Image (tube, rainbow over all chains, first blue to last red; front, side, top):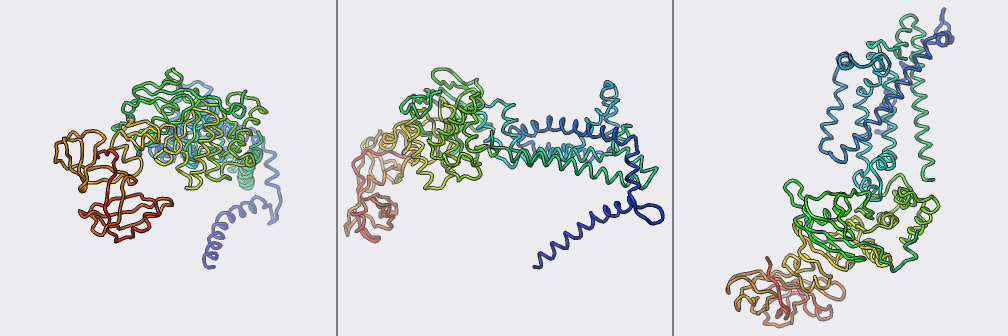
Length: 256
Length: 358
């Protein structure tokens, strides 16, 4: 009984911690002149000509980041688990570096490295994809690492090999389906990161959705808050769609 | 595609020969010049303590482990450079080898799918194999919904589905509980004989090896000590290591006599299976099987019964010699009944030639 009460108290406190600011934001975004409430600020969002292009840019960067991350990291982490398990600690440490290095250092480093790179990379959001893959590394690595640790990877791989599977087949037919939730988890985290990242994009003068949100907010407070909430909604919606896809795959499997 | 069901007596397996296999892991010599031949359709069990190299030998044949030197001949062709996925070896692991994301049927059909067998054909064959291992009713289940024994049956069906050249069993029973282990052991043997497939079975359990195999190879430190039929191995162990590893042995203090041809143990002179390279009077340890020992009740006997352990038809009786050496004797339970603890007995060690401990 006592335990239960404690649990609810903690849950309520945390709930309030998250919900009160959000509720306040909603209330603020609905405020109109003379203490009345209306959807005026939300309505103005639709009049913003830069909303869709910046959102488009962010989604594409997100898609690129997710794709490149998974393409790079799923085989790499699998290989570490299979062949170099002793390196797991070291690689985990290295993967945490992006959390330690200040964004300004990271962005300067990237600018120096890519100074002579062709314009396709330098002048377009492609450079953001490359940066976000690095920035998301701590989350990606840990998620995939946990997913692989939860299955009996060496045995499954050896079983597949002896049944005639080539390495690409092992990866696609055996490893990926069995760490699917970790793969989706990594994709979620990448997505959330890209849709919320401001510093790098702003320094690199890229017009992404978060950058637009901030710049709009500087002129109109109500609209800014509405847009922030909107970005939350967009993120929720995308995560929801992703988890729906994940769930459907699960329901339909076994009917081969 | 012919099926295992239609060819019950066919010898579908290949012959296997290991020649001078060597493999080192850092300082450890897992294989130290291993030679072994397995004929077509034969079931050979590799037996030995952990770290003796038996699993490494099996993994080398599967292509999952490289060798430093030596040849692995399958049907006369060296396969050392061939990757695991091109070797057509059916492998059953100790546990947790089924693909968790696939149903039982899809697990069995996995290898066929990789070989481009059409959906209908591979499902038909998966069903046949599941019938063979008695799991037709579970074909739509997922591995986590099955018991350990059922999972191993599925693993066996999956390995056989690809009609492998050799069936490799890597301690497939050691994660199961005793009853299931015995059942599945007998079933593996029945299936193996029916399919006629060449099989390498690795285990650390001597009872398992002796009961299932045509020949048992006892390994020690990366080499084969002896490879013989279970009966031969038990009755005429080539070395003291084999003698002690297979079955139970009494270790008794003795003294070399008759120029190394015999040994004196507790007042009895026993013939040595091979002459000792020792001088008369040297103290040695003599190995005698419990079933070779007889105990006869005698009030002035040289030993006293201290313990009884009933095992059905036989009872293992422990007697203490006057010098404090414990002797185990397997006696028919009927005659053991009267030898209660405290009874004085005369001990004799039979007429079979004995071995010395190394």
